[in-house]
Length: 448
Image (cartoon, rainbow, N blue to C red):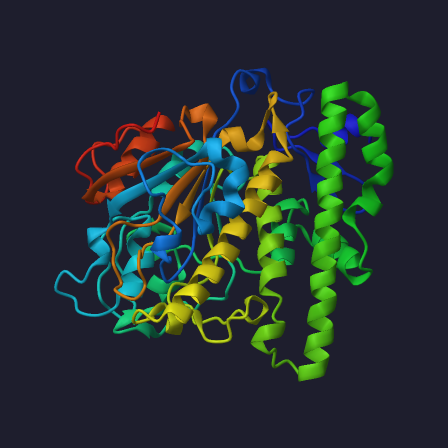
């Protein structure tokens, strides 16, 4: 079998196949069908953080051009100031009680992408709404191997009650394929990498993956000769793109192997009872971001959601000097020390978003960085965690140049403008025409 046979696949779903293992490839001009060269495919990513924000450290002072000196939480993202669109004044009315009593965290997550009131139940009679990511996935993700990806930094529960009579499902999932069907996220970078890039699910391929994992070897060790042969057949631009991509794969495999080794060591020391401070949350979150960027670069998917942590998460952050649980301190009661701790958590979360944006910038497609062809929505379904406010939400868009989003600005809307209006406007730019979505009242203006 020659190299061209090994890489050719349907459309952009090309793999580098060797004697042991396979690796999905990025967009390569040589193997892209002519009809796909006319325009780059657009992507949509959502990054969600729980328990709201310290809004005083998030919101720019005035609408208009973003200042060079950004508010503290947005400073880790200053590199992308000209590609950043901060949106103030948007609300999720369906995250409010509306007669259903307590349960703001469950509603915040369930309504964030659905703009629908979740049914208050701790049983199986779940109901929220189809989320906007799934509406877009049915269109822009229809031809990719994975219509959408769902990621999370913490394991979630898909049964039981977690918030004042609401099922845990509501707090631990963002994506809803239908109003009754949530899509549980993947939390393990290794499993996500294998699922996306390891080339299939036949018994032989599973055995090959097991061999790679058992020997702690890079998949690229098995594909070195074939990668070298392929590189010799490519033009200069494709060759550079392939080299950068394979470098990213090798570095990511190294990080995942380090996480696996840490798992083994901690598991042996604590007999499987992993202490929270040793759970590798930051390293795993960074690895998830890099796997996601590779998946988008290889066109394995074009739509993804990432819950940095579950809504209502009470994770502590000792490395940030925050020993108390996040949810606990989000009810700060005006305590300045707690508010400073929340701000440190929020700055850390913004750093994770920055890591994703950098990873997207490392990949190119049709003469531009992948970030130009990706719109990233970052925010929370709660504003101030102390009051559980669902108006004036912290939301920002990044990238999206190919969708004609004009960054470098802070837009302020009236306090009851539905977030669903933003979703309608974004859907239109992705070529998906919707008359209504959730509780929308019209399309959000001024994005371009």
